[in-house]
Image (cartoon, helix red, strand yellow):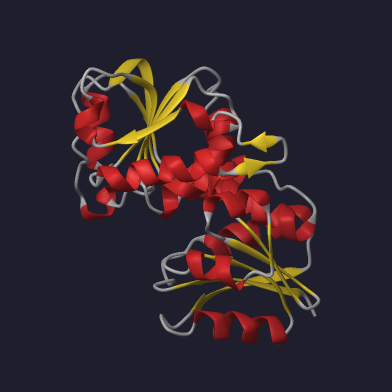
Length: 279
């Protein structure tokens, strides 16, 4: 019988993960199957354990269960530990390894697919929730010049920055964390950034974060983690001279990272991204 994997979420019917992983499996010749499973809002741990006991080999985790998956994992990778959230579980005897592939997926899309070097760039990260937490460490590893975390509630942004500044990595304090700042959108006045990343839920509601009009530096890239439609943020960025990209590439790249965690092989993401663009 082929190895079983799944993605847990609520809601979950919209998920493209089964299609993505089916393409990865076909491409790499892996004998596996992958399903989208709706977990009860109050029953996520039980649903995961039942899947594992039934022979499941691993799982992806999406909204709203990433924090619960962090608590459920018996071991965690450094990037999951830093994020405080898990989106990938690999089951093993007696427990599970929790990982977070979101940040690696974002960086691979920015650097590999879009050809953008993040070294010495000024990065603005909008949002201080789970989506933002998951990408900070991989972004810092690219050695940007600075990173500013902006949030409507400034205290949450400051607390997130302080969290990463207090963490220790394999070589002591996390490199680059001292280059981080956090604050309100009002604090962006007079500042410009080379890369502006929207990790807020504003696009889901068709809203625009309160960005200054001059926040984009010359040749800046505006990146919205949401995918599938032109968002107010991307329209605003284009109107003010920035290049734009949505999060479809990140979606596929983080899935490829999870696939490698499970199967030990990295699929080719380019044809899968193109397939989804054309769907």
